[in-house]
Amino acid sequence: SQKIEQNSEALNIQEGKTATLTCNYTNYSPAYLQWYRQDPGRGPVFLLLIRENEKEKRKERLKVTFDTTLKQSLFHITASQPADSATYLCASTRSSNTGKLIFGQGTTLQVKP
Amino acid sequence: DAGVIQSPRHEVTEMGQEVTLRCKPISGHDYLFWYRQTMMRGLELLIYFNNNVPIDDSGMPEDRFSAKMPNASFSTLKIQPSEPRDSAVYFCASNRADSPLHFGNGTRLTVT
Image 1 (cartoon, rainbow over the protein chains, first blue to last red):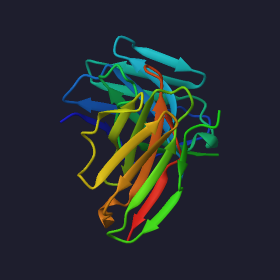
Image 2 (image 1 turned 90 degrees about the vertical axis):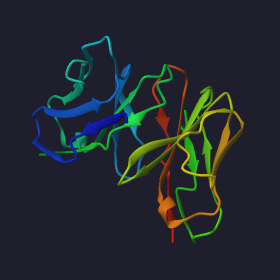
Image 3 (image 1 turned 135 degrees about the horizontal axis):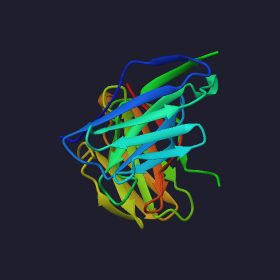
């Protein structure tokens, strides 16, 4: 079955460092990968979308890559801040409707001051 | 923009009771989605609508679950009868085609 896997272990880093989160997919080829941020008690909030024909996308301190050979997306937060502490969800779809998503379990990031 | 509005935020009910969750999507969005989040299974798509019409309900776990969208500004997800294993956070989300999802803040359902 189609599967999205994220590192279930929490990622702890020091403020100012770059956080790198990994998303691997198996048994299919998504057309889009998306990254969302989720804070406790809140709904996920969209951050970035990357298409299968794109290698890299940037938005301010965020960068996402899409490697169709490795079947992997990497999500980077540069110059991390304690306010970046949250759970980050990777999601994928083959559908032209970018809301019909398969989500990973999420990785919790803790940025220490 | 008020965002996607869900009610109630919390619902505690006894096994066997009917539960109705409500959602108001963002005005102008023609797609509406219902997702469920649990620790074990993460976020899973239950059903989605386009222009108020159900398009894909393959994620609805069983016949006890039903969803309606009587107009462009309102949708309900009903569980009847509810069971303890239905305990989860239920999210509603909306979008326009080819645009990212906007999620509500969810309804935390506890069935005792």
